[in-house]
Image (cartoon, rainbow, N blue to C red; front, side):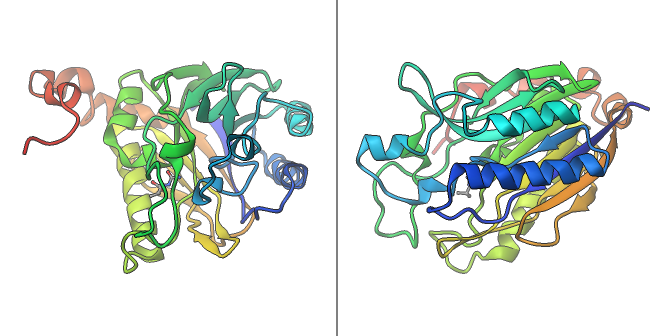
Length: 306
Ligand code: CDV
């Protein structure tokens, strides 16, 4: 048994007017609760420190840059890193990254138990659109504000296992899990902001959104025999609702913990990383059963043949 007591930390809504330091205070209180419940690793949502700003159309680059972090940690977020170090807890945190050479990414980091940053991932599957779209009920401008991640899907040997990261829309793509699965990933952490209604199809509401979310993370966990820890930013942000449904999924695809609210909430589970071994030595023993001679199109072609 290789047990990692892990916490998925769901954040309730963050309004446009909320300060980063108020959010950090909330995160510290939730981290304390996770520690109290025995966790040594905590997963926070995508773009944790702010409202989900890609719903707002902006043209002024200075205004856009205000949502980004030029360093991590920085004076505002440092207290969170200090508290995690005191607790001896690792973290996954999503944030908007502005690099020294002016590049914009939707990023997550993995920290060790002393708050050293040991891994970085930049979101690869960016949903939405680049220009204002008057046909949509609301905007989703990730393609305007971020460039696609340039770091691939690496894994890290940390916290007693093999750790991987993804961000929100990545969880809907089987390639995300499989690329990490091929590197032996045992635990994938991901954060998300998922609007409760499809901006292009009003009848696709919260039930369908939660169904597709669970379907994706449960399938990814099962088909790659790994734990998936998914943390939502949930609730109504300035009138725009986001689903909750934060979950911990075991390597057989079962949900072992799920949030009950759309507010700040902590889920803790003792994850046995050795439970990844059964699936990957039987039905999903990749080395024995995969048939890569038939998979070439996956990397040769992006869209379907017409
Ligand atoms: N933040 C996201 O990537 N959200 C998408 C929405 C737009 C569907 C998601 O896949 O949840």
